[in-house]
Length: 102
Image 1 (cartoon, rainbow, N blue to C red):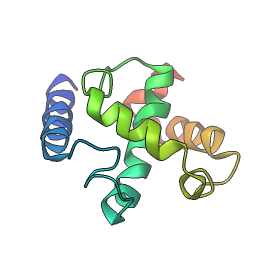
Image 2: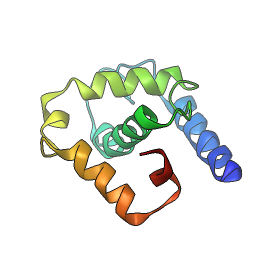
Image 3: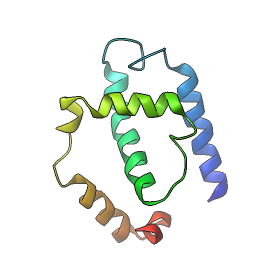
Image 4: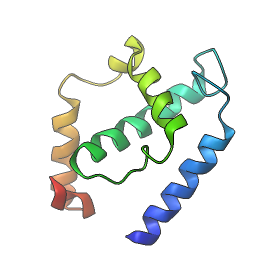
């Protein structure tokens, strides 16, 4: 598991290095990159609410990017209101590594 986390951290670091000064990935305009990354950042945030992995804590640009994205109505409405509970139910049923923290 540790090696997988290191790989994820490396990829997130690589993504962070490619970001502009924000607030969105390519600068001041919301783009397809932002839309594509939102689900990943949302799930990382949800997972970290149950088990601190410091994936976004260690990447302040990504954390700020997610905070900006999460305030957009289009992102908020991209999932059903009960998404958080559905996501955690899925994790539990899959009985994967993170299920032990739920």
